[in-house]
Amino acid sequence: MKLRVLRARPEHFGGIVELERPRALLHVDRRMMRELGHADSPLWDAPEEVDARPLSAPTEVHLVLSRRCAAGCTGCYVDATPQGAALPFSDACRILDELAAMGVFHVALGGGEALELDYLFAVAGHARKVGITPNLTTSGLGLDEKTAERCRVFGQINVSVDGVGEGYRRARGFDGFRHAERALRLLRAVKPEVGVNCVVSRSSFDGIPEVARLVRRMRLNELELLRFKPVGRGAALGEELTPEQARRIYPLARRLMWRHRIRVKLDCSFAPMVFWHRPSRRAAAFLGVQGCVGGDVLAAVAPEGHLMGCSFWGPPEADARLPGAMPAAWASGFSGFRDFVRNAPEPCASCEYLRLCRGGCRAVSAAHGSFAEPDPGCPRVQEWRAAHLPPRTRLPLVRA
Amino acid sequence: MIRGRVLRATFGCNPNSSSLGVDVTFLLFGAAFASALALVLGALLRRPKAP
Image (cartoon, rainbow over all chains, first blue to last red; front, side):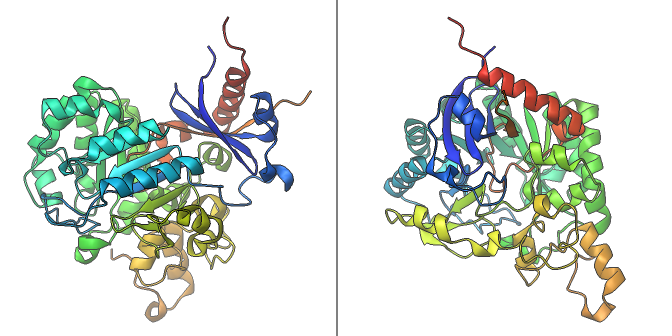
């Protein structure tokens, strides 16, 4: 078997190659790039240091197509409404053209509810045309057989299921589980790359095993657990994980993987909760297990055209609709995200996982008052503050 | 002759607003697995195309 390379782009350490099967992105050194037939890049003039600099472009971009959604979920992080703003089709296509020229491999199309946009499939088709794999997150509301068939254009599709049955209603504020389950069945009938996104909050935590059973029963290809972040409509809900839940999430994910033989992923904001259990640093580095990669691996474009390091938080770095604005901003912007490791305060500064964890989730830190502070949901940060700071000077931590 | 190396591998596509994050499935197997995977992927990348 020979691995088929779909695309490759040079980086300061060598390059990134995209494989068709298994679907993967490989970071390879300069020697390997040469062995694969690529000419030397000007990026290789500097010494070959892995992780010394941000990538030359993000590998994936979250394209928030709209803040438009009829569902009205109580914790929606983009504060979507039925009449919310949307990125026009022509702007979306032009942005995709520029991302393709920058060498971006994947886009995550979302919102809002992207399926409510009549041009969603045209945007996905355009992404394919310029060599970018479009992926989709959807609530699945209103998805029918015809629409499911058209979803073949996407790479991975995840349906949001934050709980099963009554658990769904409690988490999202409306009774939509049957619609989500039907959407999963229709999508699974046309493609294997269908999974579940489950937002893990204080009240949905105990329902995760039921969601894992659903993933197993429907033969889905992944369960992605996403940490609840107190942004958008979720800011005032008080649904952040308790310290005990934060310590339990990684062992729980491992147990569900073994028990149900399913692929379980935790989003980047869970990195501190994983590293607290001290997994192999070498394995984590090789498998791309990282905390905040905003402004490095990841970027986001908001419906208003703002280019940001992450769709949950970050100052607008450029107007992505203006030709040339994204590559220019990428070259010199995103300092809030990129400088954290260099300027990390304690206890991150002395943490052996700092270069991987990168201080946890910047959006959560910002929601608690300071973007430049360590993630207050990190168990190590909580332990350190309890030991070093008198109670009245501690930052408002996640409540027990 | 020193051969080129695979430095990192991330599998699958990410449909989410946050990044690919932690793949529990593979992280569980530890550093030895990662080293072996790097070698296998490197060998399969280099392998000449079948005629």
